[in-house]
Length: 375
Figure 1 (cartoon, rainbow, N blue to C red):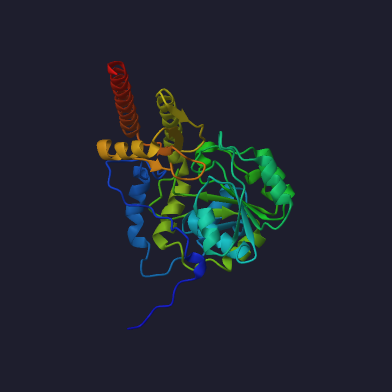
Figure 2: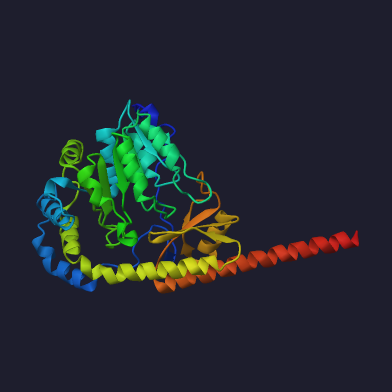
């Protein structure tokens, strides 16, 4: 019987990113848009589905979409690269600017794929942890480490996933000036924060901006992301990217969605409004600490968070994201802003769970006091 050779030793201790398929009635765990594509976009797509040509390979560089993205951002097509979601583009950056003998500077807690892709590509990992109190970037420590050299990629999630907070624009500018490393600013939640580094691209050759169609534009089910960067950066990334990685359907839908992006504005504003309601509702619950956010999700801390997560799922069929075992995020859960009814169901469930815990604690304390009196 044949024996298979082992995989690379570098992968032995690597824990894969596993998006578990958990059954629930309310999904508030993946930062998805709760609304599907607008009806007018779906109608147009249905009328064009026969024109896509499933038997032909897609445009390998998604040039039609690149041109629309470039025009909207005041750039040329050579400044834009489209990928199979932001995930593919992050990995491409690690392949082109990382690898053995190179290093990535990260600011955890943040999006876990940065560290995973660094490990998979053999890129050294240089973490500069965020402040424990409020997840703010330790600006002085980051700038000092970046200025020392020996770093080839710096990743800034802005707003940061999973904490939701922004870093100051002045810090990113200082960072761009402090290093010749490629500085990736991940703006996956740009449509909710309205903060972008795009105006600074002309003056900073090492600035790269990442965005996605998955969040604000309801396309998580079709993987499309894009980079904005200088042409020399795009040319190097083209050397390592997978050919035909964005299929014809995804390209067609993304072009249509971006052309009709004004149709999403009301929904984006509504998500921001519901985010504020969610923040207020969580803040009114005792024993819950809520963190400010500029994205479509809310991070909060609650005692015994993992048990609260289980109660939400098993007793109320509401699924949120459990970060309670992530270093720096102990006892933290993240909830996506859902539809109004979904948010209301989540808040009611949280209120019931915490009230039940307070009652149990009060009963336990009373019983203990009675036993003490009997003694």
